[in-house]
Length: 503
Image 1 (spheres, rainbow, N blue to C red):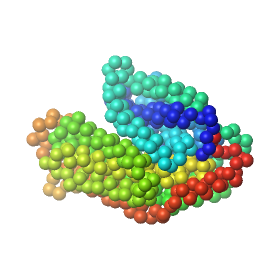
Image 2 (image 1 turned 60 degrees about the vertical axis):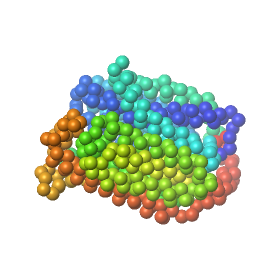
Image 3 (image 1 turned 120 degrees about the horizontal axis):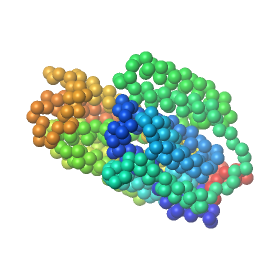
Image 4 (image 1 turned 30 degrees about the horizontal axis):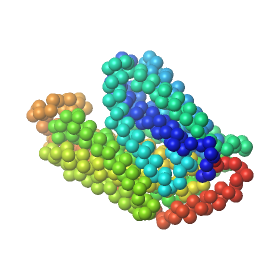
């Protein structure tokens, strides 16, 4: 990417980090405040949808905004995303009921679906591969800090002000980020008039929404409802494929997504996202319910992943030009099953330190894998495809999180009702165990053993999924990103009259 003199990279990266922090903190801070919000607004039966709504639109719109950034420019797409996110945040603070809160969280998710892929695309445009890994390490640190600081900020705001401020706190951060993007990120004006594939975007969004709703409702809602969602999914996929085959500029390029390095990277990202969701969802439950430890100790064990992740990202940024990107792509995923293995070996007498070590190793592998895959994907495509390619990787991670929650939840439920020699455990019994005072578990020994059995099956499934991430990288061909970059630069120069690149 060529650079205009008035584009100030440090301030643009400051804007990227501010916008990413806004989304990252929101993802953690809401979980702290939701019990109080649900109590005040009522509608506890809709509790999970406050989180699902955000993830649904975020995942569905990620690919759409990645394409919009390629067609209309990074700055317009980012500013629109920030505006939508802030609008959803302001409205959420004024929510008068749980259905209203869910609608406003849907709006927030749309904004987040724009901010994440476009922000990472801006980094890809502004920095060559050798420098980009370091910047992406900074962004990984933003998420790690948000995971630790978010709940504390949430608790403080609820105590001193009101729960509405967990949403309104985004406003000054978002305005600052938007100002920095406006003043210091400069693109050449685009003289052509691209047309977005609206029908393709609609069918794709419908398909992803139906898939996520079906995964969320499976095992909880009626079979009729899940059946309708699956039917909508199938119809939307058929319509989407038909539309993309005839569209002049399709929303998703099948050729791009099926390109072997991109496909291998995205499959590994999806499976790693599933494994990460298994860890974040069920490790605290095991530490508290089976190991007899406090919520603080459970949180510390999980937080070790947030230390390992930026460490892996930083290691990648500093070594990939010496070790080679393909070697890191082979090495990184190996740490994910290595980190998952200690959880398979956990028993009721284990120390939570063992769980913390596994969490750190898994996070280290996630850091290497995520940064390596992103650098590879951004380097082997032309600049005008970078937004779409980046979005495909983020979409894979988000979809992996959703699939992981559904798959591992089903495995746990099976284990709770199929423990040999012991009666099945129901939700109320499990809640009683998890809320018991540490050291007062004698009356719940049978429930503990059933929970251990169920989570052992869950962690075993997580280990197998993590191995799948390693296997997927075996299909990664040798790619010379320097040669790919030269080819992209040559094509870019040949099309310079179109004025499509950043300056």
